[in-house]
Length: 421
Image (cartoon, rainbow, N blue to C red; front, side):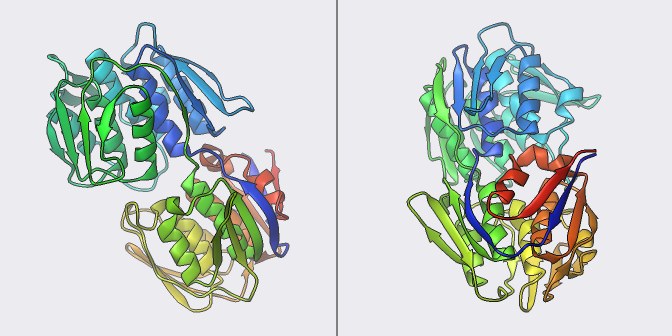
């Protein structure tokens, strides 16, 4: 397996371009199943998860091409559709479950394997099932597959989610676009990826209102047409690279970044003493005077502090002045990076869903192992501030969510390289 070597080399300076959002793109791609006309996505990130979704859609009968240097994905589902999403593909990535709603809407049936992804805790499908059953689907679980049918077609309904699940919101919204009548979805997720999906569906002819709020209203239509849509900037990549100068020192401008995508996170950085400034090209982050201050963090659904930035924020708190408490409320198994940071000299105590971090003056490079996507990049960030060399193994996780991480960090002065196995 490949590994990444990082050596603390002082402050960073320069620009980092922010890619299109992985989570948005993985949601937008299944929308091609809702129409027989072409759907084209621009600003798509070049990631292994995108390749996996491409493979899944092709197995269902869609045509998918592109993702060249121009970051364009061209898709078409004009031919016969196979409604079976096989385990061998779905097991690789949780977002594979997002074909369930579109398949039901398009074909009236779907057989979708229970999904895989990072091992960061239970992420059950019950909310997806509840919402789709309210639309008229009959769903049962057999041999690890969800078998879904809409014998009389999908019909609009009033649905209230017990939890504001992003995936369930996406599946329900996509299915409801072709349902008969009106669907009112309450306690809907508000994430930018939801807004981006709705904007794309609207460009395809869907009638949807309320994205970005807790209530989304969908008036079903008979058919959707083709469209071209630009994928929103990746707020998790944005937040991750905002932390690079905060941890290592220096000043970096994140091209294409928007503060509204990372508002709560930006507020915490400023509370810690990091300067965050909006510019004509994006967001500029700088830290030039000593250690940052410790701040407490509680992960929440958007617009709160993102769970996908918790591991990276912990890396910053490892060298902060004072004691920080990080409370994880979204996933119950998301502190697996803490023991690896402790190998670098961090002082961390984990008690259930809370990690207590006492900042040290400096970390020391060490061999560490990535346990999931966000944990892997948190170890790289910690290596930027450590004395000596940090060797991060099992970095295949990185390829699922970060485009050219070595090149982007090297471009602002980091001493980092990927070592091929």
